[in-house]
Length: 253
Image (tube, rainbow, N blue to C red; front, side, top):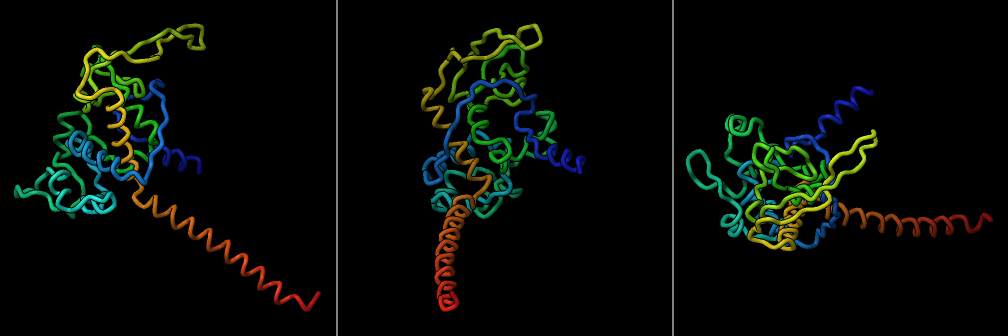
């Protein structure tokens, strides 16, 4: 049984960052409003423009996403679908949200196949994703010149760099609990601005994470609504059952 639990835990560990996780900055928390479909729509736009060239979300279909988020089919075709099939025709709206990168090419280009992100919000959590996407900073010691305050020694490039801009880490030395000290990130300093301000970029990341949260469990809002209805029904049934019981037993006592 113990071995089964170890195997299951290993399978559930995502490989989004392609590195060794450490560090705790930034460490903010966010709330995802599932009624804010406009936010998820903006997140879908950001995902297909910046993330989908490497990462697929192969458990979702374009038409289902459009229907759930209130996007007409013609706008889905125009703004969310940029891939083609083997004949060169535009991907059909009913197809799965896969990119055109082959595993062999991905392995050659990156050394590893970028993971599918359909369930990343469920495995990592929305807070981790929000902080991770805001945690890239300049680090000349890394192969791509970037590191991450949430995922140390990250190998994935900052695909949102043109929006966020370049920032460097502010660090302090803190005791490591073993008689020594280690460097800890306590903030960032913007050294070259991107096309968005900090608040605008934070909102862009929030929208992107909201979209990924939706992809992880499209039926989440429906499940909550159904659950609430079932609880109300059972409560009313309890009252009726109690009244019926009193009616049956009224002549016995």
